[in-house]
Image 1 (tube, rainbow, N blue to C red):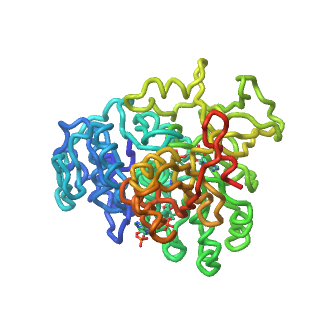
Image 2: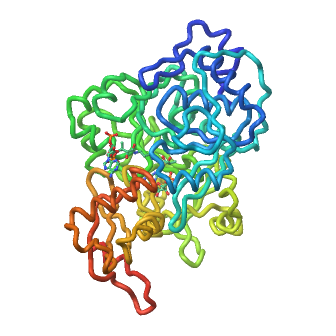
Image 3: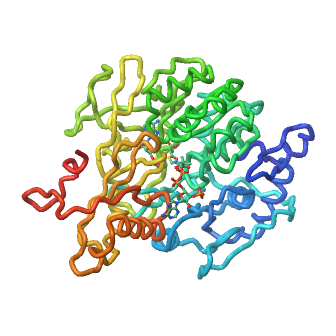
Length: 475
Ligand code: MCA
Ligand code: AMP
């Protein structure tokens, strides 16, 4: 599956470039293969392990070791708080931590030894086996485990390599987190499958991107927006081949400014944890601001209205976007009903995104069907998850969480809160209680899920049925 790490390719390739640089450490292909195979030997009898996905060589060795041995990886956000961590471990049934582990864990910890080497050869595991369980937010409840097979990942990466003309002569640069499809699967496994070196910058800062001198760059819109705010850094990307944006809508002014400063119209692509990348513009095709292009190889799309009727491809009519293709997931772990609810009877996956398609097959993502899925900094965050966490705080009687437009993050998480009488919270300053609640969510869930703003109100707007009217809060 990681073609460039095939032992024969590594043995033959004395002059091939390094595999990757991450956190300032560089690994040759032979170092990576030898160290990851030694990880594989240590965990070969496990079924499913958790990996604390810090952007480090240890994480890459853990993941590649599991792929060699055919062990399922559960990547865990390194800033996962107590409730999120407990949920992921219980729900996934991970048997051990591989590599780093959070303090106080009850699970066994299998270390990753960067300097150990093994040249044992493993057979390629079954294509239908689950390579990853990735946790992602839904509109309600705790995050769900998206099961991605080796076959889906291989199909998704090959379709992207063709769409982007991605070759071994490219160098990919990004600084994205390693617990999602974007940073981990496209951003680490992509280069290892194609054979192109990777430079992971740690944090995706404008200067780090400018200094890395790659041919392909990945970023979420927040990263690109911060880059265009630093024109000197942006101009240094002029020598790249392609700049690729995804995970959230790229604002048109950022698209235009990036083109002005770098000479490159960014390539936009669309996807989900459940589907990998299904739509993209092309290096040799039209790149239209605000549009995410056409299906990659093997993908079909369609639009349906609420009654399930076809919506015309006229560039204006809006419908629910449905997709199918070989890179789709195998369902949510342990949730057959939720899985079934997201598929149509005739086998299409309902993305939950609302889109238009024009006569040439170009797609524009208009928004989401639910106000309860927030995209902030490219992270997908369920309002329900944050509401549950806030309601667990003794000062909170009622709450409603929404995403409001934000020039840096796309959407900013805002929590409306009614304080509980007699909790003592009303005696604290507004700023004091706001910070307390923000820190509470950051510690329980994860730092990127913290509300950026708390608005204390005396009541939430409700309809006659008592349901909170979130649309009225956006005003
Ligand atoms: C502030 N901090 C706090 C608190 N307040 N820490 C704890 N508690 C608090 N109350 C500090 C942290 O210590 C940290 O500091 C800093 O705030 C983090 O700030 P934050 O604003 O959260 O981060 P940022 O730097 O603004 O992050 C922007 C970002 C990030 C880098 C763009 O959002 C990001 O990496 N996004 C990528 C998301 C992504 O990859 N999504 C892919 C999923 P310090 O920095 O000093 O440590 S989508 C996907 O996979 C599909 C398939 C697709 O389409 O791609
Ligand atoms: P996640 O599962 O975290 O990958 O989030 C997937 C969601 O991100 C999609 O359902 C879309 O709402 C959003 N998304 C991803 N890429 C784009 C894009 N290029 N434009 C608009 N929205 C996007």
